Length: 467
Image 1 (cartoon, rainbow, N blue to C red):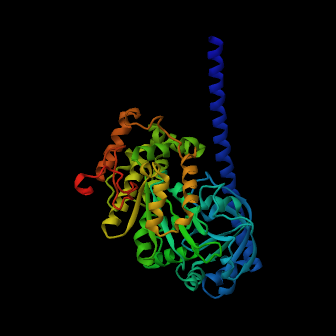
Image 2 (spheres, one colour):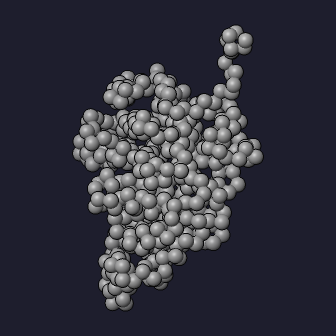
Image 3 (cartoon, rainbow, N blue to C red):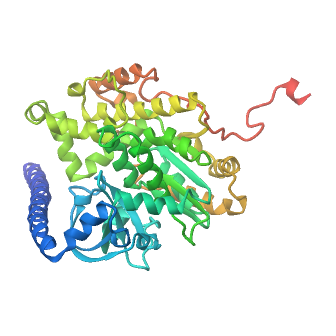
């Protein structure tokens, strides 16, 4: 027994050392990348100034050289601290290739990747690669990041001009919002099973705009125009598409009232899930990621959180900052990782409920109800969104396959019961939900416009009804 116990201890020590090594390599590689990028960027300022590249870029920003305002650059190195990080212009180290007219980005193998307050950045992939086909990657920004061959940067003046020339999408668009870990990926697969339906999962150009607007980085009216132009470029004409589905990150819920105002024909769908299961699923994902697990340690450990308070703020910003109200009643310094995710769930439901109360037509889908009868769910969904029912069986098969995905069933709590949670986490979560007039963690909440899955006469009809 002593030998067995000793072997177990050695095995545990080995696992810990391997984890420490992985964390060190992750952080060290990222630091090397950021340092290299700073050096390359500084050197390029000099070389681009000498060769005239910077002058062409400057003229394009001033609107003096529209025909050469798309700057094509070859990718030398790419790096993120973790794969789920929001797309950013600093994700790549690049070298100048050539200048092209803005219409160059309308090719089917080029897509909008991210936005800054000065320019739009597009990704070019191999012509045989379809970044919208997300069998290998769960999100558009991940597919773009890993498959990118070149980037194309464009000043906002040219970005607006080409978007204005395109006009609003000429085919149906469905805007799919969700709390995260709520079945929105499953719905994406359902829509993606319809021939001609192009699904854009988490386009981070919209995420960038949501954050930049929250930080007041745009003058009056500029944000609205950027949002319009971004949607037009995301839904640019494509022979492969007869319908677009945009599944945005949870923080983009703040944009739906603007989308409704500028694109009134867009249909809105909101996916959500039981609060306990949602938070549990998020925590499971965090525990599986080395980088996110480090963040959680810094947030939930009292000593580490005191020494590095910026880590909690970083995690809070990723989940809640864009969604929070101007008067935030939640004290951030008291939140654990569990509380931050609970707060995010509450903010999403509060924002969507508010939009529905203001008259927006939103089709809400509760995950737990939708998986009970996939065929009925797809039937009602297709009817409400006016999608051809001839593709119904394709959607049902995609629904069944994705609902069994191991990735979606990742959980922090073994049986997802309130009884298994530490009392302090339960009290924290219930306190947060109470501030938004939401039921306790794990209790059912019915959103306005909830999709009724039950078929006619699913409940026993009364005698008067039958007569």
